[in-house]
Length: 86
Image (tube, rainbow, N blue to C red):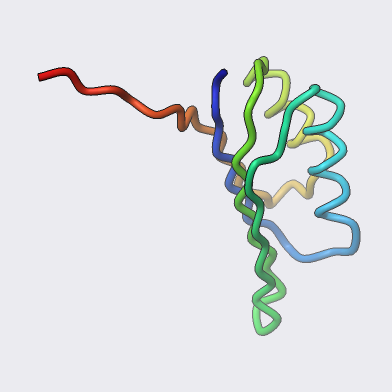
């Protein structure tokens, strides 16, 4: 099963965790780890989520971009473990 790491930086507002979690749920994905932080001095919200499942990355990025503020930075990367053979 594929694992992905989602990184978000955006202006803080109410409901961000819900909005992102809803998109993950609607894509039938499983959250394995999640953490958030708010920089109150600069009104910035940071979120890091590791989830697993099969996902259309372009569609999910499009959904996140539509849902979050325009100044948002969104990064979604495949974080599946790599196996090295010697």
